[in-house]
Every structure is written in structure tokens, then in C-alpha cells.
Image (cartoon, rainbow, N blue to C red; front, side, top):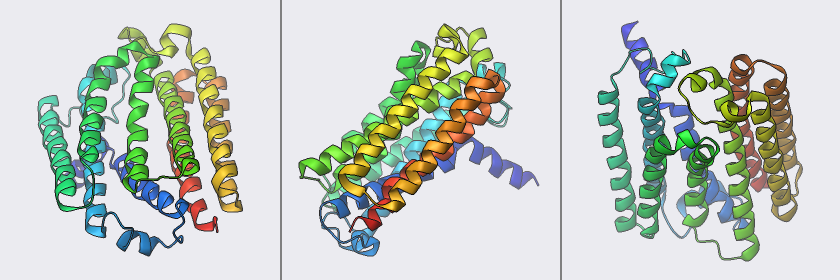
Length: 310
């Protein structure tokens, strides 16, 4: 039982589900560009003969992304421990006393270092540009820097959303897309992800409204009220759908893509109703879960839809 509890503590700390999502996103983004540039939608061909990096390199890249994303999540918990205790967020292991902040920071530094080292290995051993290492370093700066800018509320929301876009950016430009339409589609998909992530961060702030108010955090919910913050989140969700729909018209235009997009619209619609009609704590908690699902459905639209372009 103690072993299971300890495993759960580490799973809660590093939120590996989000790290896995980031890793899959890198792979999926690379495959999307692979198909959009004119190659057949053959995932095996992409893994082994994409002309840039082999399966071992892709696996190392996914591992680096997993470590990076997980370390960022844990770092945020270190800086948020007082707020999490105020918000009674005992789903966070540091807040419930499972780990000390000092121990977690040592783990995070090790994970950041391994992630950067792997990026350097990919540059040296494979046909990958030095830009990969620079992007990894940038992600570390964004992830750690968020803890210093989040008191600025909305700016902090947008700052952390860059971390959601980073795996897409790495995956998209790993295969060096050249066609203008492909680049435009990549930028729109990144924009959709950015707006969706920012909307999710606003929803998270709505859930944390009471604790943030006590801690004098300058979130949109604290500054303008939970309901007004919810309306801003809805605007971001709407822009997300618009960007994704434009990509659908430009590149996809198949039933699989539109199925996932409709599902995304439904989830975001339920999320919007929830944060408007329920209390900040209850509605925010539900909406936070819904928006996590929405990230998977958005990725599904872009990834699974690409198999049916031709």
C-alpha cells in the first residue's frame, strides 16, 4: 500500500499525463508536416524514413519533452505551495506534505539537465539543427519564469500557454516545412493551441479564486470577478475553434477532422456553461477537467484527420 501511495505521489507531482501529451504532440506534429508536404499518410514511413531523424532520435526527443514538461509542472507546485494550501489543493503532493520543496527542486534540476543533454545529443548525432537545444532552453526559461510573472494575471496566463505551444513548434519545424500554405496551417494550429491553453489557464484561476484573493494574486478572476473572467475564457475558446476551422478548410476538409472539431466545440460549450452558471470552486474544478479533455480532442482533430487528407 505504501508503495502504491508513493507512486501516486510522484504521478500527482509530475502530472505525467500532460507530459505524455506533450511528447505525443511532438510526434504528431512531425507526422502532420510529413503528410502535408506530400508524403503518404504512412506512420511507419514517417517513423523510419522521414528524411531528417530516425526512430531512435524521435524516441529521445519524446523523452526529453516528457522530462521537460513534467519538471515544469513540479516546479510550479514548488512556487505555488502556499497558494495551494490556501486553496486546499491537497491533490498537490507538496501541499499535502508528501515531498519537501527542496527535494522537488533537486529532481526538477536533474530533469531539466537531462532534457537539455538529450537535445544536444540529437543535434550532434542526427540531422537536427542547434535550434532544438535553443528551443529546449527557451522552454525551461518559460516554465520557470512563469512562477515570477503569474502574479501579473492575464500576462501570466499567456506566458504559460507558450509551454503548450512549444511541443507543436518543435514537431512542426523539425521536418522544415517550406510551402507557405503548410507554414500558415502550422501557425494556425499553434494559435489554436495557444488560445485553448490560455482559456484553460483562466478557468484554472477561476477555480483558485478564493485562495488567489487571499494571496493577492492579480488573476482575471480576482481583478474583474469570476464571471467576467469566464467570459474572457469563452472568447479564447471561440478563437480556438475559428483557427482550427480555418485549418480544416485549408488542409483537412474530411469528416474525421470535423468529427473531432465538433466534439471539441461540444466540450468547450459545456465548459463555458459550467463556469458561467456554477460557483468558482465547483464550476472551475469541473471546467478544469473538461479543458484537459479538450486538449486531447484538439490534438486528435489535427492528428487523426491527417490520415484522411488524400
